[in-house]
Length: 246
Image (cartoon, rainbow, N blue to C red; front, side, top):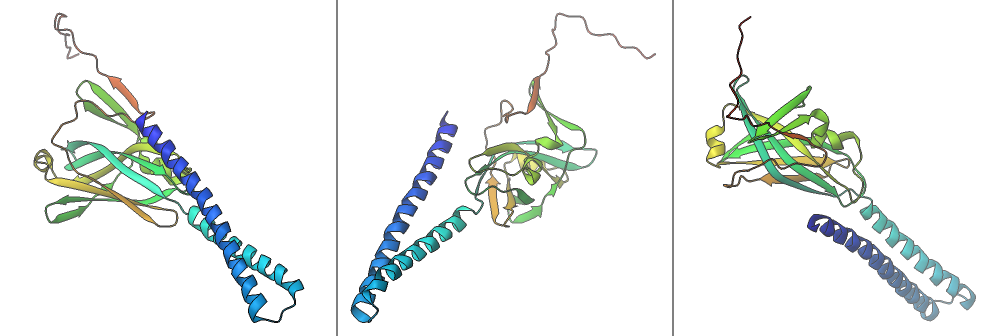
């Protein structure tokens, strides 16, 4: 599959890059050690018996420092963050517009959790801070003849808040944010955009922006392990069900 092939290619490139760095560090350390040997031989009166141990030690020290610096860089978390679709609903009872954003985080660095999720809703020059929500029980979203049942553990920010995302692992889920009022006109006119941000455990920030597409979703875009079902279509040839007031 193209997505998994891209992930494999990325990981393979990282592994090869690490190997290339180790070779380069070894060459650089050897060059510095050779330079130290030349300086000691031509500009000092240190006995030749001590020159070889000194230049070999200096080369080893430089190599150790370079590898430690590389390890420090490779031990830092790094995420690739992507927003791919959106499902929205206006809740008339609460007078809020609810947005479920489909999202993915891919870890390409050291293992890390995510934290401090925020979102802003922008229309023209107006920027509003969106309010995050957690789900009590379950929430059912309907699009056409399909339904998706979302529970709190299906939210991406919940999935990655306590469970560490290992290097090379992609985590999919939904993000739930709301804005007050009826935003149906803005949504239909494609006048808005949503930017979502989060931090890793070292407080490095990541962000992605959802820009609406004029092409409507014809079906739900499912993420792995999401609970979905198809609605049963009524047969027009069957008699209408009777109702009772008892």
